[in-house]
Image (tube, rainbow, N blue to C red):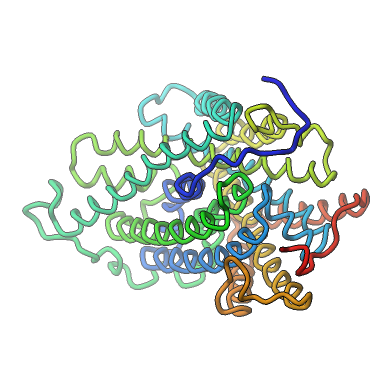
Amino acid sequence: MSHTDSNDFKRTMQSRHLVMLSLGGVIGTGLFLSSGYTVNQAGPLGAIIAYLIGGLVVYLVMMCLGELAVQMPETGSFNTYATRTIGPGTGYTVAWLYWLTWTVALGSEFTAAGLLMQHWFTDVPVWVWSALFAALIFVLNAFSSRIFAETEFWLSLIKVITVLAFIVIGAAALLGFTPATRGGSAPLFDNLFADGLFPTGVMPILMTMLAVSFAFSGTELIGIAAGETVEPEKNVPKAIKATLWRLIIFFVGTIIVIAALLPWQTASVLESPFVAVFSRTGIPYAADIMNFVIITALLSAANSGLYAASRMLWSLAEQKTLPALFKRVTRGGVPLNAIIFSMIGGLFSLLSSRFAPDSVYIALVSISGFAVVAVWMVIVASQFMFRRQFVAGGGDPATLGYRTPLYPLVPLLAFGFCTLSLIGIAFDPSQRIALYCGLPFVTLCYLAYYLTRPAVPGNLSAEESD
């Protein structure tokens, strides 16, 4: 595979690729595995409320991202937006934060897939499966963005169909139509209130918001891929709208089924709540089929994650804050060196699967959740500053290709919700490690930038944005 120093990516992605790329990044361990942790910690009704709030937050963030991505469709978008609207130090930091989000997420995806393989192969160590899956995902990313996009489209389609099937079968179980409930009384939603409205209290709803944010992370991949998309001004808004409504239906519908059918005391990250629920429906081989599909879904999320992490490294190299070798693109339009370096995160799965996979898994989810929430905060701050600078430079917001509604309320609300989710983890000992790792990481990034002081573009004016 030959290399070139060209930094030109090929615009090969269509709207359908964008939608499935975003869904592929989102529907992974956050929904299939750590949703069990959320139900256990917040209780049935508390988990539903947490996911509803998470859906609202991601909707607000994506409306802000839409305005930026349509106006500036660039690969590695977040740090470019932050550099131009807030400052180069913030742009540098957010790029590394987003890289951290996905490299750590790679570890959690591979670990989760390895844990689920033990459903059939109890004698094979988790780390063996993690290593095999890491190799597979690397190969899928290493050839061309078109191959990656097509692979991700079909992998994502499988899990979208699975989630829809889960919601339909779960609804049938709630109404008493499945073999396990037929002939008896339909459970309906009794389980939601069996131990009171909030059996674990109200505070755990806030404490689990970081895990919920991790579950929703990946929607922002649309912004990352805008620079490799055909007609971004038309396809990006269309993909954002399609993705958001699907996510809200999928996530909220799924969590209602899980909370209604799975006793909250038994939910954990050691078994997928999807598998646990299907085991209770009485449908033959349903748990085995679901286990296989979930593993496919996890690999799809890892596939999207490696794509996102490598494009962030490319963007840093493009701004001359990383060595030029990271911006080299192969003839297939792939930043191979950036992909190789980003796979480091996948190696964490070997460590986490060797030592206490359940507790280390929650730590990985929390660190990744912290990073993605910080990235969301920078996205909404970038949109807030962009609009102010655009208007100050003589620009008319009515001329924007996509305009964030209810400005400045939307970015301010999004920023506030994100701040609350970071405060919440200070009260959860199992997730507090995210603050211990995340805050020093942010400080280190700023120090690293200002000690090197590379030359980067200044603030964005209305004329430059045209």
